[in-house]
Image (cartoon, rainbow, N blue to C red; front, side, top):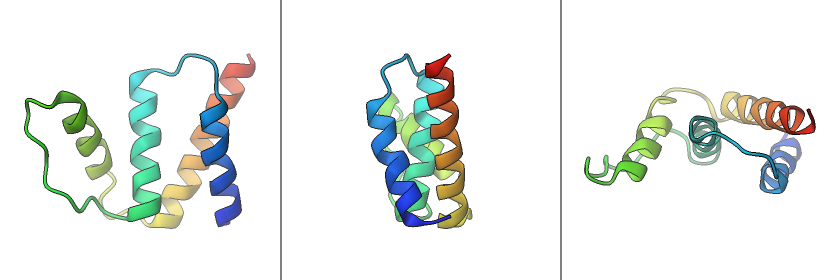
Length: 87
């Protein structure tokens, strides 16, 4: 597993045209953040900001996961989404 594959997956996700559920978007986001920044290092947003709160919670659930593991999962999830789009 290498940085190049991760970067290719990052580019590929932007090319998806099919519908992606909000839950899948949150998962992909959380693994991207964990892979690029590590453990969530920002305070929780206010509960009234539902979108920011959901993103924070998704990322924070990955606490303790290594950046390499997050990259692997991110790449696998993007591949899964690409397969689903292809039908």
